[in-house]
Length: 95
Image (cartoon, rainbow, N blue to C red; front, top):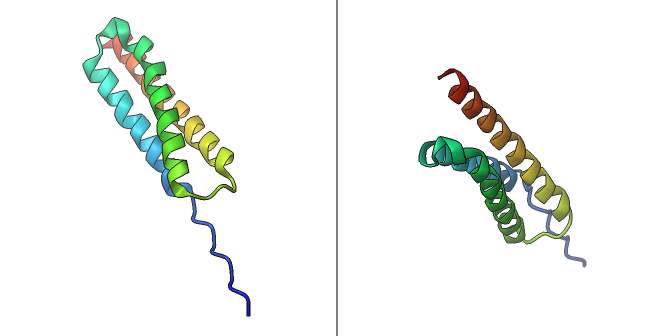
């Protein structure tokens, strides 16, 4: 009798967690950083999201699809932070 293999856990929760962290980091940068330094701090926040994505996906413990999950996490974080950065830029222009 053979033992069936375990089904791989879905990585969607870890991906979305990195996106939420990117939104939180963007809001913190928007509140804490001076207006002239916000654009300089956004790549630092994205680098933190990259490290978080690696940590979360390594914590999943499943090698199959690792790079795809990390790429989706970081690309989503880039989009989220880009939208927040666009919003902060428009607010600084018109606000």
